[in-house]
Length: 370
Image (cartoon, rainbow, N blue to C red; front, side, top):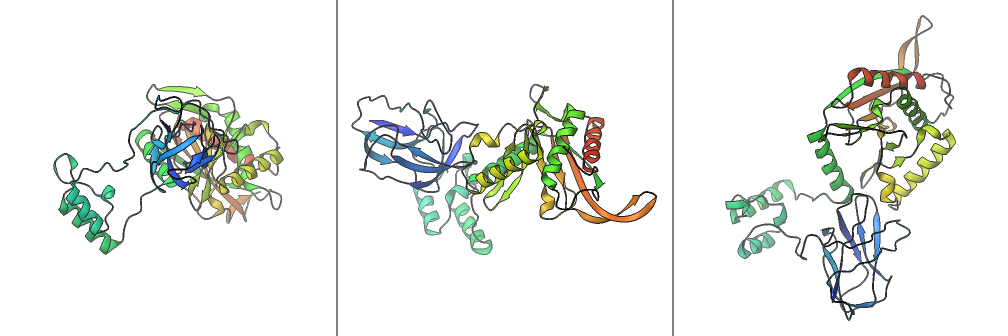
């Protein structure tokens, strides 16, 4: 017998949530038949069978979160009895491949809560998710009092929902940033009355960031806080935050300093469409050197966006508004764009950040940019 384990989906992904089973126990499958669909923080991935055989067991239910190496399917009637399936995921549509299905955390039981059978029975009777209960007993053991208290809170406040998929990853990423980064933000506004009507704000911002990275390259770097080392990045790969119902996606627009405005718009449209359809390859959401959050398309003027290591800076663009500015010695009303810059002060000086923001403002103040 052999086990098909959750494979390494690459790109730093360590877990996936079961979305839908396409087989059941007792089914005969052929190599490449679809077994299960799983959702990572990046996309929904279909996992085909690596072998031909009979399915003895399917591990996990819809909604379960599994880690790399957790068993998914047990096969029978196979020639090799090593207990490990080695092969390649042939999922061209998702562009996800793996050379080895790694043995990782064991078992089909996802529940790790410490509780006696009687306490678990009480939790089921009271409709309490025991995984969400914090134990007050020795070594974190969950007591009946803990379950009853949780049931009372559920009744008074409503049941909590476990974060999954994109939102789960977002929460972890934000916590990591909070623990590691020393953030400082600076703000300014720029008069954009010279822009042609209907000018593409996001692409103008992308080009301004590219020019600023050329003028002040200290912000287009990766910083390793553990080793206190800086890796300069020659190419500007811009992560652009995209808001969706599922959570925040941040696809990466590559090499923005060497692409035309038209090419950048086309590339961004393709990334956004891939995000909406959840077919974006994981590789297209990693490797950014700097980030843009154009939150002004919805609301807000200034913000302190979150820097995600190993990058050291994120630019925030607020909502364009009609503001009073000094123009040719007179006070006039012009469209004004608020710009925020948050940087990691471990790796970037205040002077470098100010020069970088100044370069962005200079580019945005022009009528056109190439």
